Image (cartoon, rainbow, N blue to C red):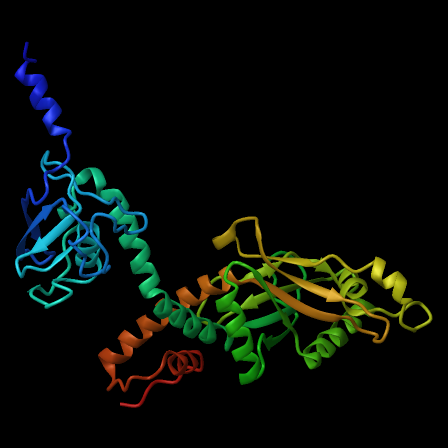
Length: 364
């Protein structure tokens, strides 16, 4: 007794493709041009992929399916182009998606990438993910170089600002002192490399000793007649409209916590005592970017060899990269304006920034 034909047909759909049973495909490039190919299941190990150089029936591409199912046809592991060259189906598909649709062996075909919709829908997601990862990896060196240039541009003009505040809310500062966060080309190169290779981590900048002596003297004088006054640290860049600022602290707290290690007798405190009483860092905030989370700190480190602690600034490198990205947009706007009104001579971003900061207009 024979079984119903409907069940027999259903069973046949699940059978593997017979050797050399071929299925024609039309593959479309992003430009709209098309090429034809045939996919099939290899009969033996003599069918070798022209990309992977191994038999197509055992070849594999990491993270991609080994076989294609097209239009209800059985699974196929090989593809033959119109030129006659044969490849593993996933290998040639990936080549077409990230390169172009020319044969890797003879270069016949279309010089444009294949549209992702040519990949059968059930197996399309892993191809989309694979292509995305490869494109990111391909662009990573260029992106890192761009970040390096952006960060250099920011660091060259980023300043630490120390302010003695006036009386009353919103009053302008009575005294302000500022210094560049990096102070030499050599220091700039070192910090720039650290930022690029440690994105997302904190990086520490030592403030110049001359700046520390200057603001220590300012606080010392304020302590004598304005000990209840307030001070504030901030980071500023001339092209960035928002500041990275600390909360306001009293002159007395600033002196005792950050600018003086002498005891009442006027000599440095005992090293063991100092080790137990390092001052808490002063958080730096940028509400427009990070809300109530701090994006850096001002730190003071005591030892028993100096009357003044070593003050450093610690900033999250991701914050620096974000600032750098914003500054790049500002520079590009300046560049566009210069191009429209002057004979633009391919000035570097670094030159444009310095000229913009100093109010210099490029010569026509």
